[in-house]
Length: 291
Image (cartoon, rainbow, N blue to C red):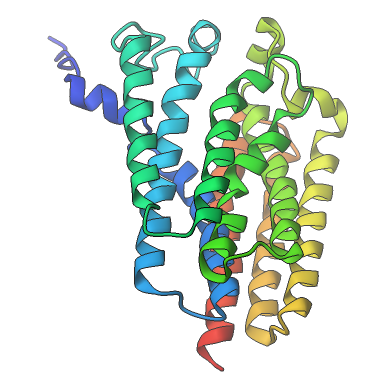
């Protein structure tokens, strides 16, 4: 007799709603934010800033997941990978999801109260971008670019927190993050391309068509070129360039994963971007540590 799986408790469903079981999204937000904090501070930032940005990244990513699932509940039931998400399966209501998202966003806003007014102003823009992203898939051909802004907005906020201003190089870092997000989220979108075509969702994987792999590699190249320019701006040395070399190696590895356009390898490439982001941050941190 086959054992039955016990039903999930409400708390477990809420954990799944905000993706506590899938931290990859949080780290893809965290690595560029930490990189910006280190660059803005010229080394290890104050511990309270580090704590605020790490917790804020976690809270805002979790809130964004709840909003995303609320917005996509009618689409998710038609996608094999997302059909059993808490809202789509009917185990968590839309009102519950919005309440959780609002509570998490409020906690994130309370976290930044000790910081300056510019950070608070940027946080409002960050919230609006994060909340509106799920709806861009209805009409924007490459919503992954908008995701890159949402996932990278911690970078100008980090400079604002440390330097009380947002220099042009911080916006350049954000542009670089957009190209990185288009690369890794196109890999993610390749997993669901067949389902997305059926239900009419717009993704970069569909927009790029047969040039998807080439577009991903081009985006990786632009991202790394921007990071190279940023390194020159901050006069970073060999540890940073070693980190970029490792990141470039990750991108090449992703090419071999995605060139066959199979679901599992494409998803593996997406998840492997954790190491690409970590390599860039490690290069920055090591460069300043050795000075």
